Length: 208
Image (cartoon, rainbow, N blue to C red; front, side, top):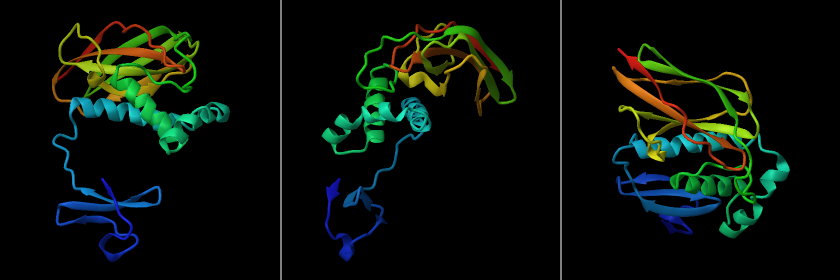
């Protein structure tokens, strides 16, 4: 990425020219970069990264203001917002197969929830997964993993969804659209300070 002061004889040029260069603005700074076309925008790794990004973006608003402020030192060091610091740090954690944390200053000491139910029910081109807890403790969410083979090990690139699980209600995720196959699922619970539970028992469903 190249920062420019007056791209294309304009103060605010944007868009792609000649399928080669893209002009835009980030945090008030004009820049130009080469046009990039993803080789496979739905690869397993990309789905895992996007699943975590979606969870982080959706649940930032629910974090207490004093806790959000704890991201400020990292944000200042990187010259980004507190939100971007929170996303950046937690995505880096996830790529190392660690779970996200609301607070960058504490270290994985809280207790995850106690599992009550974990089921998979096949439907038309879909599988409905139900997860509930008997005790929530400091649980914040669950990362859900899928495989076409049984007795698999959960890894970040097998992650298909990250959902909010912070109470004892029924939490449902619908995996769709699916082709006809036998699907296997596991999940890992995690606390608000990033402590992960062990992998759950495996559940499975056959989509005809």
